[in-house]
Picture 1 (cartoon, rainbow, N blue to C red):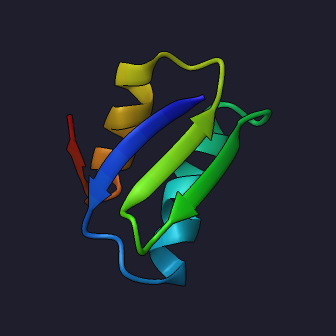
Picture 2: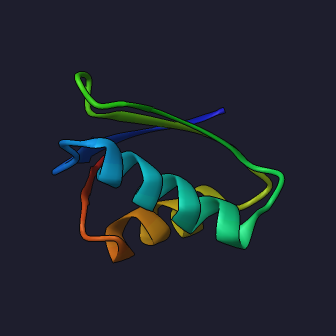
Length: 64
């Protein structure tokens, strides 16, 4: 399970955008978003840098 601290997520649209971005690249991925904590948990075969880049491409900031 990869855990990312993500800034800029505020609503259900944000959750769907991040989830869809990952699932589009790895249909078997599991994505859990906690808006209050600003946290995205991803279970995926994709490498961590690729998942981070997908989140960034949706317009959010990944804090390492």
